[in-house]
Image 1 (cartoon, one colour):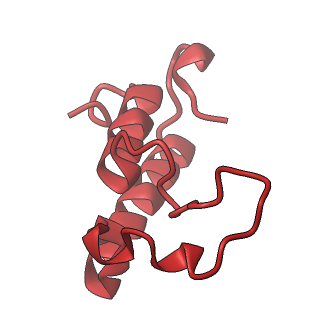
Image 2: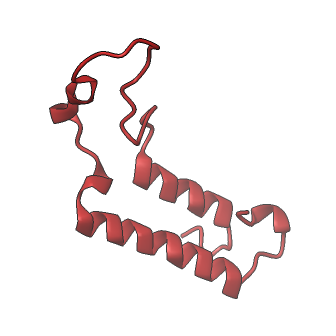
Length: 85
């Protein structure tokens, strides 16, 4: 919907919400202290379900970003403030 209106910043915001949601550490950072702890990677690792962990979903989400980038190049917005990057 935003791409039809050439609102590429809002379209990019929707893409980011889809890709990473509102997770504080979407890439799985578990190191919050300065001291090493054995098996820190395994803490709550089984409870993490992320949309980018599935290869098919990751490819579809990447294609959405590519479409946004292509549309912005092919159909630039009238107002440059609506352009990503």
